[in-house]
Amino acid sequence: MDDKSSSRIGLIAGEGEFPLILAKSLKSKGYSVYAVCFSKEQEKNLKELSERVTRIYIGQLGKLIETFKRDGVRDLVFLGKVDKSHALRFNLPDFRALKLWRSLRSREDNSLLTALVEELEGSGFVVRGPAEFLSDYLTPEGVLTKREPSTEEWEDIRYGLKVAKAIGDLDIGQCVVVKNRMTVAVEAMEGTDETILRGGRLVSGAIVVKIAKPRQDPRLDLPVVGYKTIETMIKAKAKVLALLAGKTFFLQREKALELANKHDIAICGVKDGEGEA
Image (cartoon, rainbow, N blue to C red):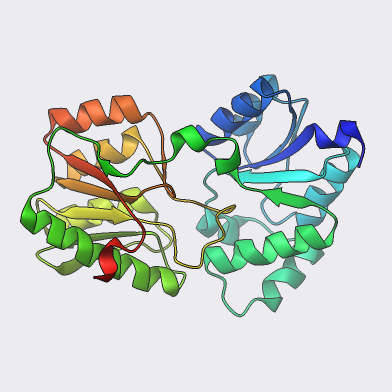
């Protein structure tokens, strides 16, 4: 491996602000960023932060591999939201992606990403985790807001952690909404915000729990929350957000905590194993 390739990072960028934060961080650390993205908007956003940006369709696995090899990139990082349901409806996969898709026993997110990583590593790439470069954005342990959860809310948090781990074991989703030790909503393909809103249509004062899946590769799809999550909780009249400490990214944290305090929402980072007692 030469010095030039070791200073290059290939960013597989989904949607949202987080891939841009990572690109800025990598650039500040002296890396040259070569990005692959899936939308015109993200392509425009990444241009000033990258040496080169290539826009492809989701499912063009062969082109993704060819692009990074052309740019002399060895190390890759995944970050950002990819709408799998949109991809399934509107994008035709290439032969390599189709072969991978047909080989999967499960096509849930973690299984799909794990298979993709194995395919990329088999092609000579090294996949690294975003937490390696963005550790300051990980949720710390403890209560982060002025208001602490009540005794009853802590019971719901522990219950929610058990439910979240159960659906995580099945590779379904990362977020659950609970109230009075009952499951109100479970995340599937629709994403966290829609899960919270669906829960809010059923109950008021709910507890939202979001964790990494128990068998999740820490390099892939760690949970992410931010200011928008708190806005969604306000709309849903949810009162507590519990996150897995050290394994959940929290964006715009200061601004989000200020908003949570204003609306009497409790936010806490819980340690792994909290819901097993």
